[in-house]
Image (cartoon, rainbow over all chains, first blue to last red; front, side):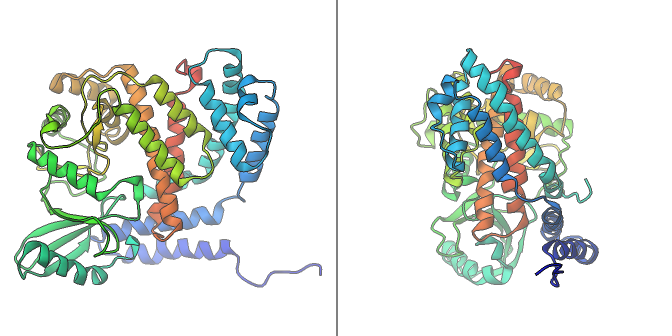
Length: 146
Length: 320
């Protein structure tokens, strides 16, 4: 069937309602001495905003990217020693960690290569994640608008 | 789990338990949650005879710390003359309230806002003196432990590594690297001291000029006191004063010199510890405590610590 228009509310629409209601109705209604309730309300509003705005979960793409990096390092003695080539998330992430761990304290070409090619990808992926979740840090600290 | 606790659900079992512990008929007259703390659910308890307590209730393993250990350190520190609230009774099984908890005396303080990280000069001086005293006190007279100077730091790294691995079946490569870096670069320790683990503004009660009691002992352990000094500079005390001002204060008041190397190592350790501990909140949020602080700590705050750890040990800075 073509051209179906969903008739139900989306999760995003519902989450926007949660955030707006907490901010405009519930928070102003709290007593001044309701410190815990106020803190939790701000955190809930931040969590709802995050849930409404976050992009689709990128885990699969990120694992694929790490597989590609490890695949490009198969001639590297460290990577060869820690990665069997299996591409399950668990094995790949374990191998990435083991490669970084093995490189610690070593000052040779293989260790440099791991640090120069694998580590920056992991850092960038983390930075991408933090760009989406930083609003949660603000909410944790009691701020809703940065 | 603890986020479902309400005054109504707590009052009756707590009332009955306190009557047994106290051996009298006083009843709970006032009970409300205190707006501080994420590791524990803290409740103000006032009895009909005017006695005031704090009930400190676990939240399903948040931060991988246990009431029994916290209670024991607080009791020991009290016996050693360190500023700490008197701990009264502990229920370590979770049979009464569904979670382990203990009860300590409530202390009045001058600070109203726990997020206010400012310190008056006299108070900052007293705080550093008292923290230094905690570090240097002879704990062997009141605490039992087989921790030695040779094993203390490694023990802590392994402790937090195991906390992280128990929470995540999927490895976090930058945390793996952090653990390896910490083990590789662990400095020699001359003397094991009591390390508070979370010291600083917001985590002690004071009268405006002097410390009345250190609070939040859940991270306390035996180890290298340099962990606490670095924690003050880069974490809990970072909004209080500059790095240079903290370091000058440590030197002047406590005779403690914190080198750049010390600061780098123990900052890395503290970020590692924070990243591992915070991960527990993700599991707690998923499995029953749906309080939003659990979600925030278990995701964004955890990731922030991983990022800071990676930055501190960045091999392009010549550290690895």
